Image 1 (cartoon, rainbow, N blue to C red):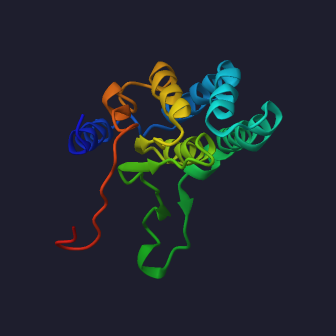
Image 2 (tube, helix red, strand yellow):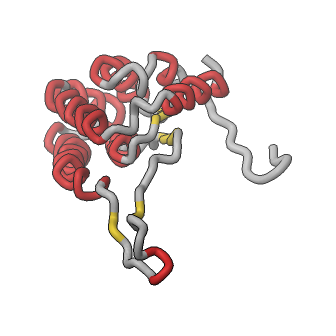
Length: 183
């Protein structure tokens, strides 16, 4: 699948509005946590195969950090997502004044070869918590992890957020252009 098509599908998923409700975000984070716990051995095995890490290092350097992050975000998300009251001025005395945060859309996460699980999944936690759709490109240099993530993530995350095409980038290169007319 071409990158443009993947991004368009992610934008359509975001535009549907399904990713915005707080309960949906929490459900997706709980599903991500369940995925990690149910596939701990597979994750550690992929890290061992790709990076030759021993099981202890693979688990405690990558998996534990992501699980702790998910736990913390699930606990704090209702507080973070709540409207924040602001001080009224003489002109706004009759108004209800608050700051209401909204997700911005689609987040691209490019994984690294040296921490292929943590640097791919941990940013996904924040993106999901914020209500965004996610496009991820695991590192092709950590092939076992890229293949594992491509297999297990669609089994746990909602298809609106994670349709099968969003994982079509796992073994492709990605050209990034910055600025008008950049190539």
